[in-house]
Image (cartoon, rainbow, N blue to C red; front, top):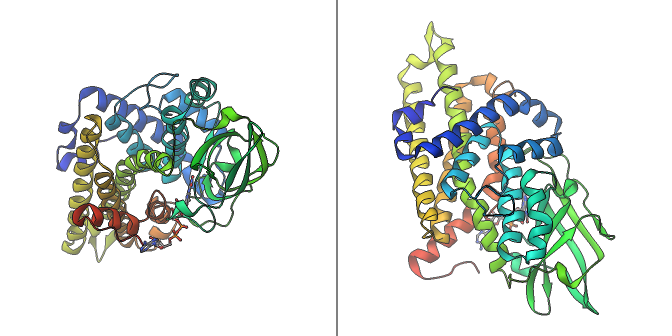
Amino acid sequence: SRTPAVTQLLALDSLLEPDEIEIRDTVRRFADERLRPHIADWFEHAHIPVRDLAKELGGLGVLGMHLDGYGCAGLSATTYGLACLELEAVDSGIRSLVSVQGSLAMFSIHHWGSEEQKLEWLPRMATGEAIGCFGLTEPDFGSNPGGMRTTAKHHGTDWVLNGTKMWITNGSIADVAVVWAQTDDGIRGFVVPTDTPGFSAPEIHKKMSLRASITSELVLEDVRLPAAAVLPEARGLTGPLTSLGEARFGIVFGSMGAARDCLETAIDYAKTREVFEKPLAAYQLTQAKLADMAVEVGKGHLLAYHLGRLKDRGEITAAQVSTGKLNNVREAIAVARECRTILGANGITLEYPVIRHANNLESVLTYEGTSEVHQLTIGRALTGESAFR
Ligand code: FAD
């Protein structure tokens, strides 16, 4: 693969260590060779071979790559972010698969789980043999998950779960679901094997965004689990919100992959497309668009790298991750839309990645905390006033 224009413009690789660049390039090569040739078809047909891909991504070492032990690679947060960036340069749906597996499902078990839960699930999830999902959102509770209606009640020593989760990535293909539910003791997390009687996961169809990603409901009807199914270390909303912070961090990088891919496409297109007898790239209006976008994509990379270093030093705060997610997804979607204008009518087809990225980024803008929720989080950090309710 050639070096992207924005990487060259700002010498972005000078901020990375040689081993980070090596792993990043390995993921980029895999993404370009194994994923890119198929992604438009997967998106068009809303069909992605998740089982096969999970095993390949596991072989590549990116599933739970920032976790230690249990078959995970134990790499830095920055390296994980760079992998997310390269995968999302192909499609946000692929990055979602890796985020949900590694940062939501595996991280929750790794961070909040018992030794037995970790030994049972993490090694198989790291190789991609077992697929995980993360059930927090409900039909009536997205930005305010604290209101959730799913319950887990004691029946003798067992737990019995009832409720419905909505918009759950990989729900219908998962082997294990991390499900959050109200108990007498506040919100707790549960490790739910998806073959437990009473568990079903109907797929959500007719999506216009993230079509190369499975999204499902989770329906829990008297799902009976042993006492050992609860995540022992997670209490209250801190549990799911900490896990979400991990995935959100990956999006700070990932969204810049989508933006970079749009910009590369627009630059190439503008250089070869002739209008009024000269290349589109030779017009000042086009160059102004490309320059402004390169500035934003470059700044987004710098922000991501900075947050990566803070996270690797163990210093990152939730408001900082919110700042990265708010800015980088907002700018990525603006870049995708602007690139679409440069491609003219060709920009609306799946022959080019641009409208696919733009549509995907609509979901990315909403999940892992909407832009408004991140504005409120940053606002609270700036003022000390919580304006959520
Ligand atoms: P709402 O919470 O109803 O928000 C609607 C609007 O109100 C938004 O603009 C929001 O910003 C705004 N709003 C909310 N609160 C305030 C406020 N206080 N002040 C001002 N404005 C406000 N969830 C999971 O648990 N697991 C998954 O794997 C998962 N995958 C997903 C995959 C996809 C493709 C999508 C689209 C969603 C996924 N989600 C998942 C759900 C996602 O996290 C929620 O959609 C998100 O939290 C927003 O919730 P909502 O859609 O109910 O919107």
